[in-house]
Amino acid sequence: MTKMVPVPSRGIIPERDVDKRPILETHHLGIDFGGLTAVDDISLTIGRTEISGLIGPNGAGKTTVFNMLTNVYQPTRGTILLDGKPTAGKTTAQVNRMGIARTFQNIRLFSNMSVLDNVKVGLHNEIKENLFASVTHAFGYVKAERKARERALELLDFFSMADMADAEAGSLPYGAQRRLEIVRALATNPGIILLDEPAAGMNPSETAELMENIRRIRDTFGIAVLLIEHDMSLVMNLCEGICVLDHGKVIAKGSPDEIKQNPAVIEAYLGKKKEAE
Amino acid sequence: MLKFKSLKKTTRTAVTSYGIILVAFAIMFPLQQFGLLSNAMAGQLVPICTYIVMAISLNLTVGVLGELSLGHAGFMSVGAFCGAITSSALQEVIPAAPLRLLVAIIIGGIFAGIAGLLVGIPVLRLRGDYLAIVTLAFGEIIRNIINCLYVGVDKRGLHISMKDIASLGMENGRVIINGPQGAVGITRISTFASGIVLILFTLFIVLNLMNSRTGRAITAIRDNRIAAESVGISITKYKLTAFITSSVLAGMAGALYAMNFSTVAAKKFDFNTSILILVFVVLGGMGNITGSIIATTILYMVPEILREFSDYRMLIYAIVLILVMLFTNSAKAKLFRERVFDFVLRRKKNEEEEGVKND
Ligand SMILES: Nc1ncnc2c1ncn2[C@@H]1O[C@H](COP(=O)(O)OP(=O)(O)OP(=O)(O)O)[C@@H](O)[C@H]1O
Ligand SMILES: [Mg+2]
Image 1 (spheres, rainbow over the protein chains, first blue to last red):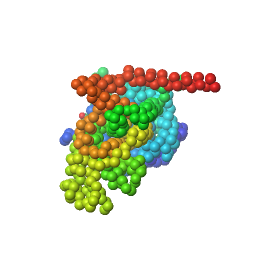
Image 2 (image 1 turned 90 degrees about the horizontal axis):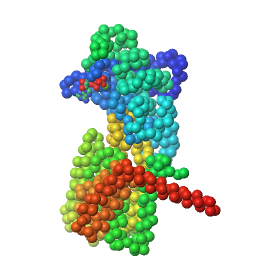
Image 3 (image 1 turned 30 degrees about the vertical axis):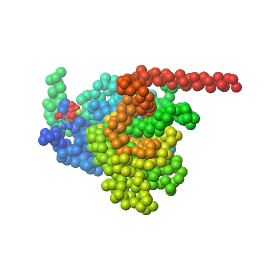
């Protein structure tokens, strides 16, 4: 799995081609809810350091795809290969340990805990101490706690949040809460991170900062990013590959330029938006 | 200047909790030793210690883990009867009372922990509030089983029967558990000091756990299960950890409690007792360990003190319930408490500084 070793951002492009095997593959993925097909026949391939987008109108099934990728929902059909290994039958927690982390459309922080503790929870499987150490506060507890604290602060600092470490997570402004969710997900040291509408509710300057951060995540941690987003300029500027869903089905796949010119997409998605304006 | 509020929250909780217990011991122990307490009061010391341990341990399940348990007294009774059997059976083997008490408490804790495991494994895998109903049933089942349990000891060892004493088939043996009468002929080896030690042990376990990797995982599950799973936390594992820890501590409290009386019947550990402990926890504040200690002490003492005012007893009790709830849970009360502690600490600091000047 991708290690959290900083990769120099210059010269990253040649290095990216070292490992050609995709980090994530899905084959004909589909799910029914009580006989109703919500998502059907999704086949995706995502490279190890690729930034990809999953877009589509409201209710298209984007979040449902994320829920299948993380085994929150068990897919009715199809297979998911994470780093070449099938995830069928695994729990959400096990899939995370296999290398997939995510954020949520409706923010899900541990809102009564401090910012620092939220990130420490993310480090759960990265920095371990056993139950005996937990109960006695000895036998490696101090060392593990210090290590967790240092790593958590390091990660927070990466997103200029170190000064908020002691604040209660629920009391943070909206944008900071979204950033904290990303930090917490990164703390699990994933090979791919899924972001569900990371720019929702952000103003243009926050969105610009977010785009910069997503690039930095890819460059620094050398991992893949798959994001759901309604902000088209963000998607078109950031993503190398885009997949468009409508009514649970893939209607187009390709580079931003290809997507922009695809008539089916304009019809289903961009066209609708124009009408609404 | 040393400010109580500026300390980390976890440190504050630890200082307050250990502080209250140590101060209470420092005041009550001499009074008890010199016989200055009324008989009724002296008799309540060990039960109060027991119920404080019960409340703290239940708070781990209800407040920290966020699962409702309605059968905490069931685990207490497992500990009580296993402890009583251990102590009676080992009377000749371990003559030293404190050591025998320690062994009985440990055995009581282990068996309650096993009961917790058996209840927890099937239930805590499910999503939803199944734990409440299953622990409720567990409490009732355990009580009914012990009601028709006969245990005796003779030279050949332990004898167990579910019928009557005769079917134990003992030669010159001693009956330890006599059906509906419960555990009989217990040597009363629990002491106030051992109760305080058990509270300190419980605080050590629970406060340390809360402020650790394991505790963060447990709290994360309570705050947001889906998010906790998404960062790789095994839900069942940590739910079980919290629940079993809570059961073990309840079993230890049960053993301490049993050894304070010469007889203990199973009906003492019924649904009402479970609810009483839950009331202590809720009124003391979910996840608030200090609150559990304060609420238990006050709410356990008040009915005893009010015995003389029998007519108004329930009325005053209700008022006290409300006051305790306000004191432990409102933001203003929290602020007030912090001020009080600030004041105390500042005085201490000033005294120290003056002491330095005088030198
Ligand atoms: N657990 C469920 N049970 C039944 N139907 C569901 C469930 N989850 C999702 N759906 C349905 O699947 C469809 C896709 O929902 P989903 O949340 O994936 O859309 P989305 O593309 O993320 O939309 P949005 O842009 O609004 O977030 C919706 O019609 C929704 O009602
Ligand atoms: Mg969605």
